[in-house]
Image 1: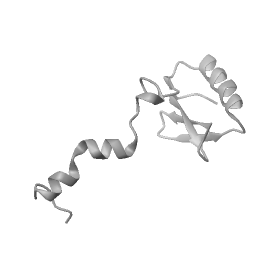
Image 2 (image 1 turned 180 degrees about the vertical axis):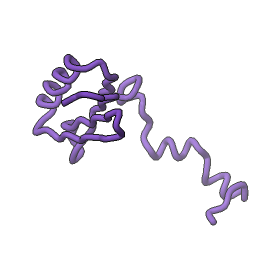
Image 3 (image 1 turned 60 degrees about the vertical axis):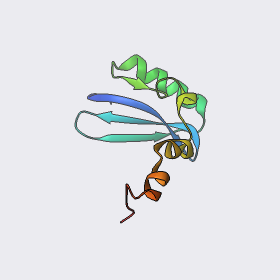
Image 4 (image 1 turned 90 degrees about the vertical axis):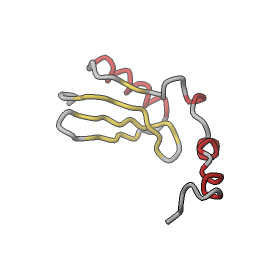
Length: 90
C-alpha cells in the first residue's frame, strides 16, 4: 500500500539503475530492487499514477550535472589549506 508515501526516488542496486526507494510519513522506508531498468520504469509509472508524492528520478539537471567525486574534492582546496596550516588532520 502507498498510504502515507511522502517521496520516492530512483536508486541503483549493484551499480545498475534497477531500484526504487520509498519514504513514508511514519518514518519508514522501503527499498525495492527489480530485475532490470524497464521493470523499474513500469513500477515508477504505476506509483506515479497512484500517488501525488514527489518522485525524483535523477538529480536536478540530470546525472551529467553531477561532478566526479575527485573533482568535487579538488574544488574544495583541502590539500592546499592543509599544507598552509589552515586545517589539521587531527
